Image (cartoon, rainbow, N blue to C red):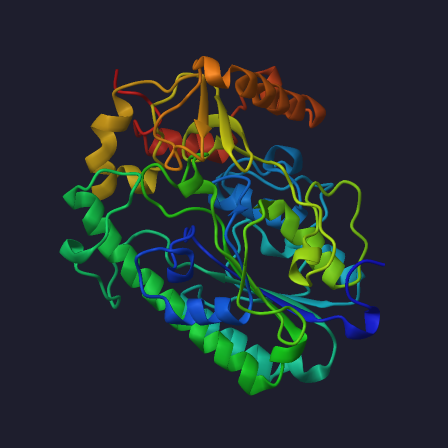
Length: 439
């Protein structure tokens, strides 16, 4: 059986925050995150880990099911009526069968009704970083001491917008390093200054949790997973298939089992997290799971690297359908419908950074296809679609995306996805033009 033996099954704690992307010091971001960096120094840091969709619910749904959003049904936001399909099996359900105690602490964004996700216990703690860290500490020093293996998912709201919040520090906008994929403009700096304060609070919570593992005596037999759902809530990141949207943080620590201080650059998707956890638990990985376990990377055993991952988007606050493939060198994006050059989710669109970029992104329509050579153009600024040098690559990746859609019976093949009732009502009550090009 792959993974850990029954007698050595570790506990698993997954901490997932909102909208962090790879904006931490250990992944090269211009910010001080000492506790997160220390965790990376103790564990395995993955530098090429991608989400399936750069939006909250669909990405998290892939972690919960090991499947792509249009396959598990969660193609939009859970609070707007989108759901994981009734026949889908979730991570806590699999682990319940494997004899684990499963617990949710604070936040989830995969279903409007948390009990339907399969957790045995739900701790309705507030979802701010300090409260969640305290709730996890209480659990580790309390119920976790009974000796039964456990799986805990901790949901933290930071650093989700709004970036202007009471009781949070802010950085100095004038001292910041601008984002390389956006122009250097005052509104973008203003938003980054607030983002830094939220990430500092998150990093503080990571420190609290590290101490709780040590103080409770559970560190050595607990796999600590720290991750996020998608990229930061800035233009050309969240809500796109560009790397700043799909690249996410993943750190996995298991003292005495996984050699710490390593950086693994293999291409992964967050569909891969569920089968990896099942392997750790000694549980079988069902054939419908589309992800692949990367336990071999963690324990430095056999592992066959991926040569591609898929990513997608369908609904957010607006309809924004796209399908994409990323290899180690190339990114191909297929866009559907008449959409702005770069869509910005509502929380970005109305923010200072969004105001700065409206004219740039909403005065023209995106092309039907985009192709980027990530080796020559890592910031994805210049599509090479139509360049004769890349004609063969374009045909290959175009075919792979189409074949994937056919093999998975993607509903987008048959026309537009209709909105849910809640999605339609939300758009009627709060009309915005963030899905309409200004042309």
